[in-house]
Length: 325
Length: 308
Image (tube, rainbow over all chains, first blue to last red; front, side, top):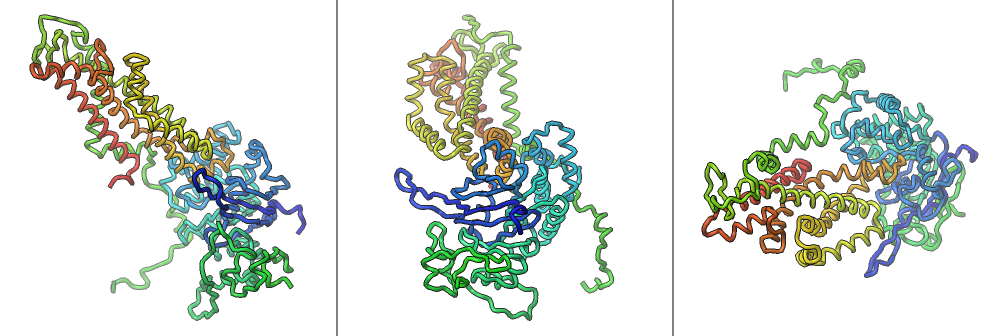
């Protein structure tokens, strides 16, 4: 793949939250929510990010959109470094990168009608004609499978799946290029999940969208992603093509994670890798490889040096000393 | 169960499913305010209070106009009369009609209370929204200022103010604002802190909305319920504060005929002509009670989850 096709490139992104304490509230420590993450998303593809709760998936997504200010690193969107943009330029760039949120019950303002919610992006970006806004709102409602009569309704009158589709319509109002989907289906019923996932895929085709898809459900990620990155304690430890990752997981953490996916076959016998212990606190992550405290293949070097994130062939990146020979 | 056989069941075809129109919403569309009004209407005590408040406001406006007496017209031939057809609530020791004086008092007391409450609202909301939304160091400094203000006893502040400015309606209003806006600011800040990390606020920021838009379109409208409830509780408190200050002799003075002044004057005659004390007190009691019950009802109407 050549560079020109990369829509989003994240280089050494870090987000540290200071932990304040003491009498004069000095910084005592940092919670390393995102700790040196690099990856790129190609035009038109879906990159899935998976990991346990609290591993920094959402913070990564929000840092890319600068909803939280990254501590360090750069985010190149179409060659422009988002982290250095001025307020006004960032505002203009926001047309091109949008977000779909996790909780469909919290992501729509309960005081606004659907029409008002969907018109907001247009108003913010200077579409002043009321008629034009209305037409666009009705069109987008139909695109996500709702109908124009829903425009006058309030969010609380809709079901979770319908609300999520309104959230998707809002993200699409400005014809963005990149959509960061922050666990868009994890709050939904399983029967509705597939409906929303299929809608996302249809929309991707229709509008040539690029997705950064954040989730913790492996089967969901497998369904929708082209490539998948696995995060652990604020770092990406493995990144590969979807099929490659599922067939040939290299990092011990990924192997454990995949072995835990339930299979719909009662006779299926598998060797489940049970990890010992809990995820260490991101305020005080272990030195060296962050996973060494729980890794079944731990070696001496793992406790001392942080492994490089290297291509092991086939564009399969992994960050593990086991492959450093 | 036995009379249900296999052939009674048929899968729904795609066409039939479409015809079901599963996306349709049957219920009537209700905005937040319509919904709150519907709940308030079901609350009898709150509705009685609401009509009482409306009646008091209407009487305050129209009763003095419709009566043949005025609040300061003295008539020494009818001093200290008991309630009668001529003078519904009797007269005071200058022969002034008490019915008119009670409603004149309502005008002044309600004016003071409402003006002070609205000023609280204006200052408190702006201060609270800025502190909550900007956050960080700004919030820290703004909240420390409030804590210093809260640390000064209200009564001392009010007495100082009256000494400097002299007793009067505007001094009274200012005294209430100085002691009252802090509560509103704290309340609004708390709400904003809660709201600003909600996803719909993040969504608005992702869309590129500026801070002003986020504050006015998302934060304030969602805090409005609690602001209104606080307002309806502040008004009776202010009425009470005026009455207390006047009663202990540091508030308003005649010839202003506020409720506090009426109670103060009536109290001197309580053994001989108790109605001069009783009717203004009753007016204060009914008004504060009505506002408080209404406030409670509004709280339940705006946030039904709070009611237990």
